[in-house]
Image 1 (cartoon, rainbow, N blue to C red):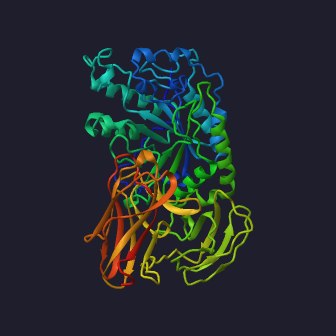
Image 2 (cartoon, rainbow, N blue to C red):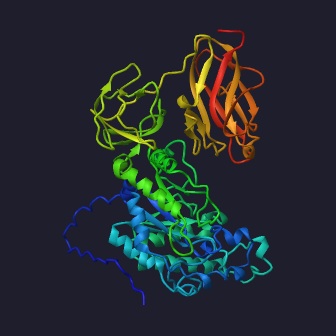
Image 3 (tube, one colour):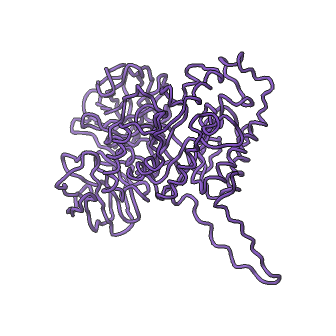
Length: 568
């Protein structure tokens, strides 16, 4: 029999006529999460047997009865909760989110609400969540639960997909019963496994807030465990946003908390033939990028049907862990850096009066912090502790080059004399011939996806997968003039066709359509038809997508504006 564990009931009695002491301020439920910055996502279920991902049932249009062939074959004898938690801890992760039930409706924990579970429907007959919860407590790791709202198996879940209506008709289904089923399972999850750090919902796109009874679900969670954090995928904002497989270009507005969930290769659940693994360098830089914008990284592992992490995942976790042991100070407990843009390829995080410079590539002309007004008290390399010299320059403090650079990310702790004060960069002035060279490194990027990256040693604006994102430069134009517009960009054949404009807000514009350049690293310069009229004074030149038919706009390296007929 299961029973309630770790729940304390208290009764406060106040004698008549005695004033109760003022209540202490409520602790910040999100403090640990913001301190952590780095967690592990684990997608594991019977879908690991066919080994082509957690959407196997949907992709292959399998009837629920046909998918039921997998539980009787699921017997992960190599599962070791201690090894899983240790791998996460050694990588520098502070919490784990485990998939208790994915869209296939199969419960990966012991539930009395359904026989379609790992304990009752497999020969293994074990509750991995019980082992994982015990091991997380032993090793000091926080544990949260992924839980899918939608279900491809439950007889009461609606809607049915077109391909299953004949074999699994919707007649007799009752969403009210299904909501009651979810509440029963959530109650089990929140009362049987100790403290639950996060409930990580998914699948909310098929129904509205009212249809999901989202507020009731949140109330249930917080009644059982008030400190449990909840993500935004019931279509309510809740505690934090969850961009998937992308990193916002800027911190979210209003100080909104957020967490990027991302795979190491291209898959969430184990896919035998997916060998497109991100390099340890990419993963470390993604973590630094996310922390520099005030977010968390939830990095995924998809264990095999035997219950072990793929060796490629284990290797990457170990590499990240080595970097984190030397440089974690620049990640844990940090917040977004104070710079809108940097003069080097890297990122900046902040903790109080200390800035952490994450230098991906050392600039050829030296490392400078353009616009920083606060005096620097000291500078040291986190890995090894080497002290660096700081000298004043017209552009801001210049930091000496370390003896050894980390090819993944060299982190320099810059202790300031006070809170950082950063002046906005001045408008871009024309070169001697009157032309403006608007490079990616000095652009202001607005939006949720597009961000600065480096390809071939030169920065460009990539990951432009949200059509609403924009790229802007602020110019100091000496006099009104017409300018030709040359755009240097790269685009893969699969993402061509985006229409874009180069414009002065409220004024003139030039437009073009993105063509195939031969790949994301094959940059080509294209002249747009017509000319762009710039007014005298300060002018903002913006690149924006008018349409994005195939998932990405382009990789943008430079816009060059050349005065028609010579210097204006």
